Amino acid sequence: MIYGIYHSAAGLAVQEYRQAIISNNLANADTPGFKPDRVAVIERPVESVERGDARARHRVYDGLSGGLFETPVYTEFKQGPLERTDAPLDVALLGRGFFRVGTPEGVRYTRDGRFTISPDGTLLTQSGEHPLLSASGTPIRIDPRSRDDVSIDTLGAVFQGSAEVGRLDVVDVSDSRSMTKVGGNLFECSEDAHSISAELRPGAVEQSAADPIGSLTQMIAAARAYELNASLISIQDATLSKVVNDVGRLG
Image 1: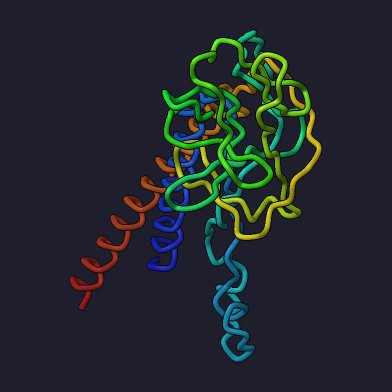
Image 2: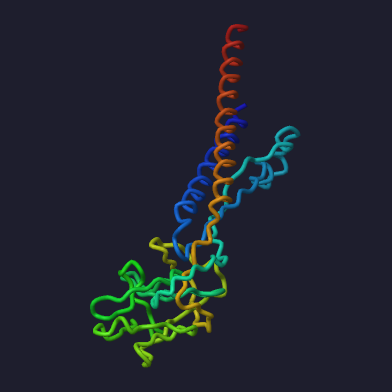
């Protein structure tokens, strides 16, 4: 009986965790360049298998699972739909790659191609906090007196009028699992990122890759599973109380 309560409690924790991940995906369904997170749920080995102790095998318990637990969250780096904006400082990445940006904590990466220009002429992310970096690692700057004459081409070159003033450094990694979200639509990387020749779409923005309808369906399924596990705990608790009380009266 206690074994069953443990399983149901583990199920509650897993479904609560799933709901947190799904909620974040839903909250960012309109965030340009957002990549949804996924969590896999796997079966925990029975105790005798987990310990590797053949003497601990039990005919009944070995017929039961060891419950469920979640694996680490992973990010799904699929392409989001493109939305045409015709804004000169908007650019969408097609396929793999990330824009390299500078932050007080070091180099970070983003798929959000909505840029702006600071009063001193530095090309910044949409938040206005982080400069876009060139291949040399320096911020891209323009003459702030002519900020209306700025454009970005399909290769990432930044022009002021007909003069190229910089080039966006688009990078990629060999293993996408090395990219970790750090908030603000930014990623940090645990391996060295390398520059690539990416295809860009000027005057467009990559929308969120999150699927609102699919996420809502997953949220409903997780909520129902949570309720079921909570009900099972109540049933098992009531049964256990009845057993204890009845045994006491028989004694």
